Image 1 (cartoon, rainbow, N blue to C red):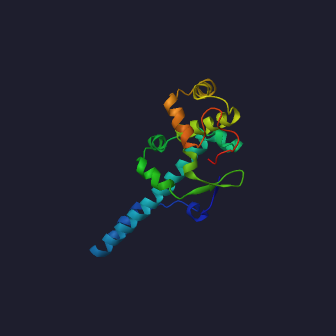
Image 2: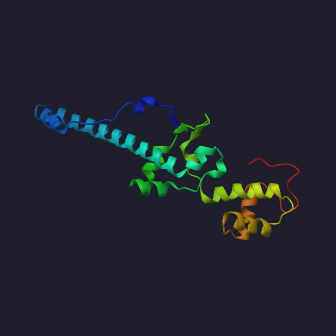
Image 3: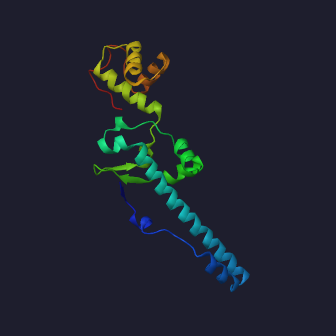
Length: 182
């Protein structure tokens, strides 16, 4: 993965606690308060940088098939909550951390980090779309059975109908002529 903001990865911020205590003793109370605030910001920045690096490592581990192949169908369902628990951070922290960030994939495309967190539903919808386009005459029950047979997905018939409508797919025999835009 390539980073678009290399400055953030140049080094880690570390503080010399003993020197910091010595320095605080020589300062006025007002300056000591200001330096405390600055040190909290440095610690937060170091935590954020380290956590982002840990998130990227977790994504590389979890989505290695996708990263090797470049095929979005090879992604595995992964929630932000799952990764947050693995890294012992709050899900809201992880959500803010990955917001508006992207990496350069091995195939030279910029990919938002949120792409690495596909929901099970989104993945099943993509698989349903592919099946429905391969077999335009297949009914909802047949599509449901194929999803179960091929992917082990137990999806109700009403969910199949809902996914099909979300994808703009017609019912049995009403798709294939004009390929809808996903």
